[in-house]
Length: 142
Image (tube, rainbow, N blue to C red; front, side):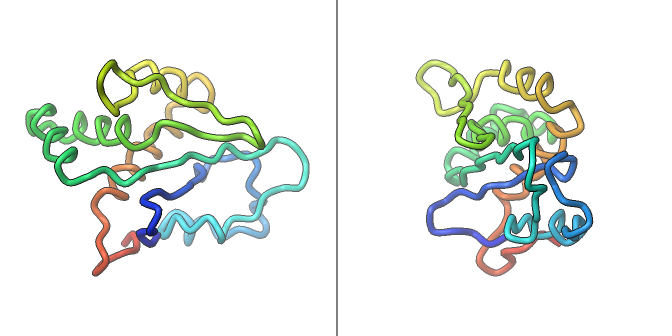
């Protein structure tokens, strides 16, 4: 995954049912999160594509302070600050944000869990966290 100039990436879960498993190297996709590596089935279901934005360093520091050095809480806060929408075909679903913030409400996680399952939520939390930590010197997952 390379840092893009538009400050966001789009990803799908490795558990996505619309992935054509015969034509996709899931191991390489999981490592790089390069969506160009993923081939989808031509019929339904349509894939759920999640948009992850790059959070500012100032916001990351605030989230770290809020989480009181609890790594799990910090990762979930990174997710709530960076993943606030997904699309399935032409339909875009957006999270409701906490008042006067750029952070999604906790209910967003519940909504995603209900729609996609907890394993997908856990995967997206980790991807969102890793996306915040990549740099120009090391633009790919290891």
